[in-house]
Image (cartoon, rainbow, N blue to C red; front, side, top):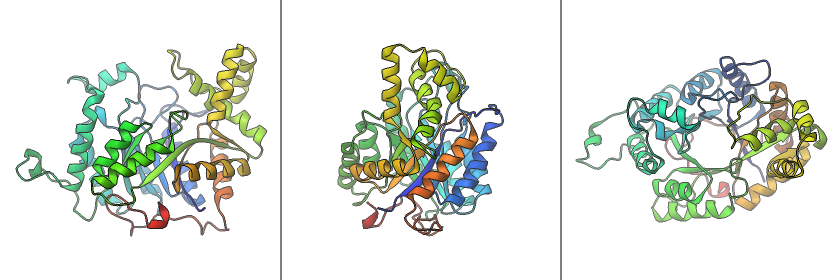
Length: 363
């Protein structure tokens, strides 16, 4: 099976970088990943974090699209509950006009930060609750497609684009609610298994497709399975490097948010963990795709077959940038059936200008 590979970049603050300098590393990584044959490069959104520096994916989308030639670039995703759907639509319509055929707009309902940052983002208005997200997502789609009914007050609003130049629309989610909403709105679904690995199941894609078809959007909805992946020359090296991401994931629910720890620091802390903490660490490691190139290739192909998708999003968080670049490079080489990258689908300006509809053999 030939798979499309997509980078989902959370803009981690690597060793020897800062909140201010980390975004430039994302630009460098995107340039390298385009050379490796990756199909898309998506930027995540986080706020008030000492681990991730991507506070404004739309700015990084513009910078990376300018620095690359072919790879599709987009948000993975804009946390829509913080913003006006019209403003988001305007921003990405403008980006699509600047970079025709290359811009994706992915949105999610998560806050991307803590309660305090959400309050600050809402100032001076009221904090937008998650239950407004379906309305916001519907309005966003209508703005992008120009599909408000005649007589609707927003029907008179225009975007800096035309009907042949629209961003492709995606929803990020890890459960049935987002899946059904994406299907109803005719959006692609990026299933975030890296966030909820024990909840995400193939049935979520099945629900998305069923609702998508019943809503009259076509037969083959775009779908992408997003995984946490660490690839290194050997399984042992990969497990060591992955310690950074595993420990970060373990501690994500607590009040203490340390900067990303080095693998050596994580190994030292592992020795001091209780039996239950070690069991949680080991289980979290097992939720990720971690190993040598061959181990990662085999596991990713199994998951792609189980979930019925031909596109995989790769989330790689490491302490050092070099380990991250190596992981993406080794994975790209392992997943390439031939040589020279000819088996990867390079993005072109001829792709669908709205919601990408894969060919029958890409479902």
